Amino acid sequence: MRFRFDHNKSRRLRENRKRGIGFEEVQEIFSHPYYEDRRSDDPEQFRVIGRVKARLYSLIYEIREDAVGEYYHLVTLWRATKEERNLYEAFS
Image 1 (cartoon, rainbow, N blue to C red):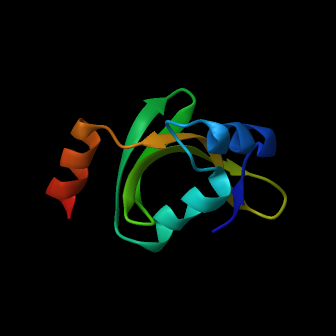
Image 2 (cartoon, one colour):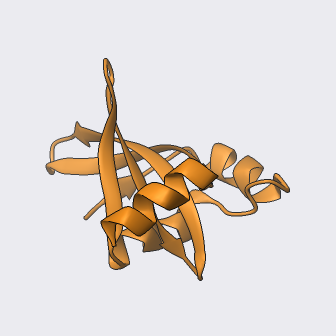
């Protein structure tokens, strides 16, 4: 799995008290069981809810392609809401 993201946005997310994590760390979501659904069709975006260091986060990403092949473009992230925690618990 390859990832790409805006490094400046990642820094701003990490510095935000409500988020406190950047794209570098949140990639861990894909290493554990996670819940995934489609967030939008245009552009096609997906939401993943999963654990990063014992805390649940939601991550929005798009599948894009370059000369090497597909990669995940990370768009934004936040701590999972109560509704998202319930989705994750029902899934797992």
